[in-house]
Length: 156
Image (cartoon, rainbow, N blue to C red; front, side, top):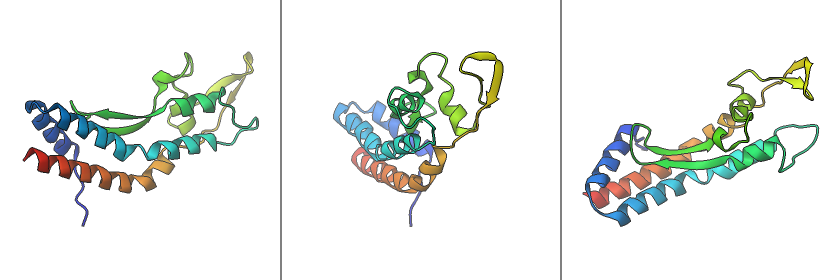
């Protein structure tokens, strides 16, 4: 049986780590959380590269920028403590920061055709993130639970 941990468990463990003065244990906790989430990054990047395009994949194009913006984020403090895979709009060039959510289909994607503001088109979304992360999520949750169990044993 697999016991799923909640964000509350993670917050409790991170609070206990903050109270302790063991920098090595804190460092190991962050490192192991990052290692548990890292295998999903190449999966998401491959999904972005496989988004259909008439021009093919270019590292300098929009999809290339999205690939470079994909990363693991680990937080061990606050309400959002945990490890997350993120296609970070803040890492995108100006005026393209909302592109990751528009391509996923969360926002409407309308733009002028080659800069001609008299002619606009609505771009179809090409979901790339949740459809590949959900199936792999169970393995990541198990890995995070192993990390939490090991750190809990070390704290106790």
